[in-house]
Amino acid sequence: MKNIFFFTCFSLACCFARPAIAQVVYSTDWKSDAQVIVYVTDSKSDADLVVYKTKSKSDAEGKNEGVWYFAEWRSDAKKQIYFTEWKSDADLIVYFTDSKSDAGWKSKKKMHLLY
Image 1 (cartoon, rainbow, N blue to C red):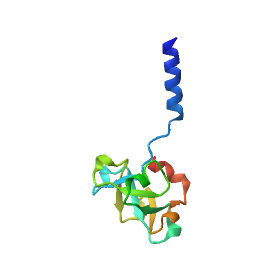
Image 2: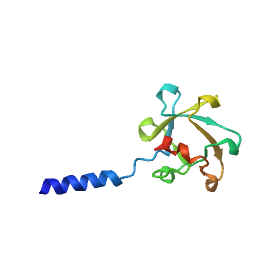
Image 3: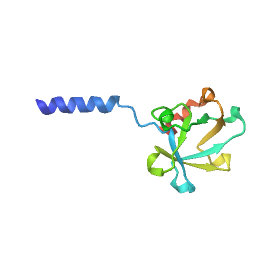
């Protein structure tokens, strides 16, 4: 009976647990190391995601709202990204903003890339 209770609780916890959200990123120099290929656009209207770079790791953790903290070490990041010069190579197109209130998804269909 104890085992059934434990198994049931564990199963429910797994079902309702949120996945780790990757807003703590590491910029890699190698495309082959990246989990997401990112292109930076100069036009906010072309972006899938408007990104605000924060200097505080706690501002970025646990959210998928376009607030990114760039980790110094790969092991500290939830996602490794590679910045490409070619829009056609990108998985995600971002626009960097100076205003935290502007950050957010413009195309929610790509949100899964940062989970």
